[in-house]
Amino acid sequence: MSRVDKFNPLAKGSAIDQKRDELRGGTSGKASIGEPGFAEIKSDAIRFGLATDVLYPMSAGKEASIYLALWNNHPIILKAYRLWATPHKLSMTKGHIRESSGKKTRWILGFLEDIAVKEFDILDNCFRAGVRVPTPISRVANYLTMRFIGDGETPAPQLREIELEDPEAVMNEVFDQYLLMYRDANYVHGDLSAYNILWWQDHAWIIDVPQGEPVNKWSDMNKIELILQRDIHNVLKYFESYGIERDPEHILNVFLDAFIPSNLRNYRELRKEGMELL
Ligand SMILES: Nc1ncnc2c1ncn2[C@@H]1O[C@H](COP(=O)(O)OP(=O)(O)O)[C@@H](O)[C@H]1O
Ligand SMILES: [Mg+2]
Image (tube, rainbow, N blue to C red; front, side, top):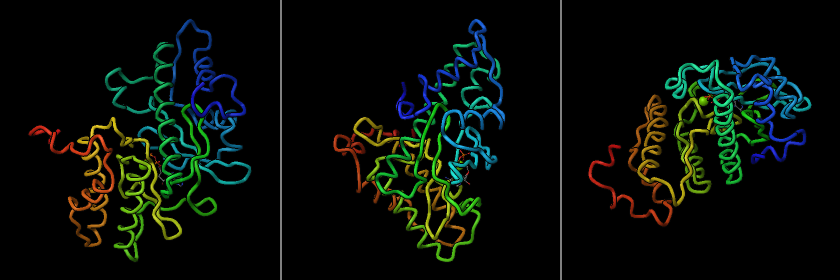
């Protein structure tokens, strides 16, 4: 049984196994998966005990759809990973995945579950470290639920949608939050931008973390540095529209001074020439 499923009171075996069995439908290993419709997602979420109702889709990104759901009248967010609906990296190598063998279906569902597990774990670790992220609630199969950031049924706006009164203070807050995530939860975000920061109750909330990478003694610090650079660049790009200029190299060094796993401290000296371009 996978990590979070064991806490699911409704689980009969792993939920992803039940879903796989259902998809295989006893058809000698053949199964087809199409784009899951709203009705299917809603019934899964209720059956898995993730929500008591699912109201409507709020956003459909490349790999995941976001729904406003309810837990006993309390609004929550349901995020459903659904890779096969889009030409994703995987489907580009394997063809557009709509029809597939039972084995491939299981592999794809397992892959989707892994992304949901990863997002849940990163949210959980960030939340525990005090980073302002939506509190994760539960995760079953390729679905996860988290705190709804917003008022009533109105979601908080993304940073790019609003006009800030004191952009410099907000920029400092965003970097402070990201530094907490990096130094205390030990993750890089991997997709930080004005799209994945919400503005609510005069604070910046970091969301959409599944592209994060853990920073630990097994990490490739060259890769971590590149991800940090890209995230810092994307945040600075947004604040440039307010006429704010900052040295990205200086911010990068604040992060690296705050934390590098002890066995990797001298990664820069060990870097072979040209490696910074990788
Ligand atoms: N916890 C949340 N509370 C309120 N709105 C959210 C929440 N999570 C996501 N959203 C909204 O849904 C959008 C897409 O969610 P996100 O996690 O960024 O997925 P995607 O992978 O599709 O970008 C966000 O930009 C935001 O507007
Ligand atoms: Mg996003």
